[in-house]
Image (tube, rainbow, N blue to C red):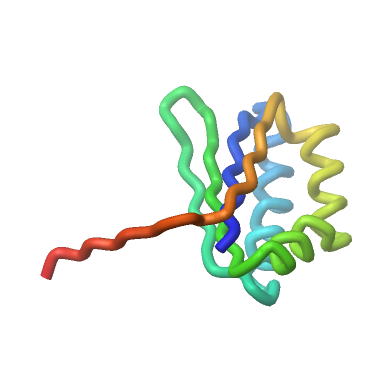
Amino acid sequence: MILTIFRSRLRPEHVEEYAVVAARMDELAHSMPGFLAIKTFTAADGERVSIVEFADEESQRAWREHPEHREAQRLGRERFYQEFRIQVCRLERAHDFRQR
């Protein structure tokens, strides 16, 4: 499994425009082969963190290179984000617990 951790802060003047693009990117990601999950959280200080899971490096790369996603990346740099940081990691170990 490949995890992408995307940390960002939005520019307040483009939040509404960002929401439209983000909704489309979420829809597109869900349709990609190898997509497993995405969760996005916003901290009290405004930092946003998205954790995106793909089955393997090939499917994560296909997502990164998808033409619509590339355009969203360009808009992100030019309009939406004050700052961002991307970390791509290979899952080495996982443990689950669910109380019954």
